[in-house]
Length: 250
Ligand code: 6PG
Image (cartoon, helix red, strand yellow):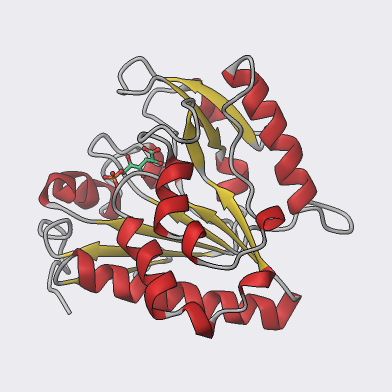
């Protein structure tokens, strides 16, 4: 564990990274269920986590008590659920369709609302309902995140006013620079309250941002993920970690 309070593990390639990520998720889920009778996870979007999701269903299906899972999403593009750009659709096809997680335990971010703002408000209510604890909002047991070459994570983009959000748990985002400008994202207060955050990063196009974030050079959204009490783990493949001091692979 580096003095930055985050653990960085590197792997030969995306397949090795995905296998390790799936094993970590199974272990964290088991521990959470033993401790609290349930496991809440916020899924990451994009492409990198897809293989991890597939492996959970393919290799760990019988080792998991899926009935205890509460599945949330870290962010979503404001597109219909069956749109190929939908994070929900990716997770459905890679994980949810092949595993017996009760439908009522799967909480996609709504995208059929009149506005993206309505979607954020609706998901704020969902989150408060799912994470409701006696007195406060329980921490999400595990948040999975990716990082873009610009340092964005979830749908928290550099320069976005949402980076300064301190009250809302969920925010609507308008990112003109992004391919899909309208998005909904969990905010830093919720992400940094998580018990554990795991970044999944792969590919040479991420090497520059990984180096700058892990050497605290760049104040970009991915570098602002610092769980208050929770653990922070970066799982990177050799290509993404190539410029980082411990770029060696397992
Ligand atoms: C999204 C994601 C986003 C993603 C990064 C990395 O909706 O786009 O939540 O934050 O994690 O863009 O994406 P890749 O894994 O596809 O490189």
